[in-house]
Length: 67
Image (tube, rainbow, N blue to C red; front, side):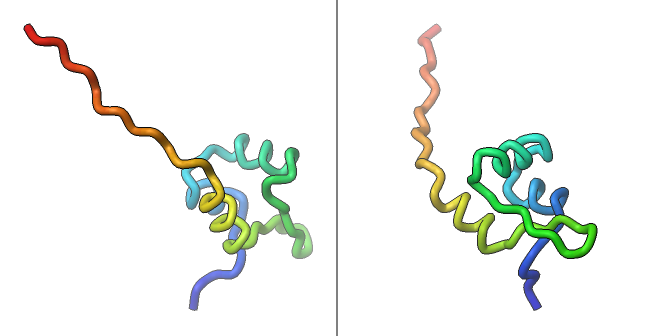
């Protein structure tokens, strides 16, 4: 069974950012934390939506100088 929600440390690990960066996403409204008693949870579907809406990266090949 797949998880519907994860803890803050799990969420940060899943999308490859720090916990501090995750809290910044809460502050700017990019992600919504949920409460279950004392636990703070983030819906996996919210994490997937956030990551899928990130802009595409432009990858440039490194420039090598001829020796």
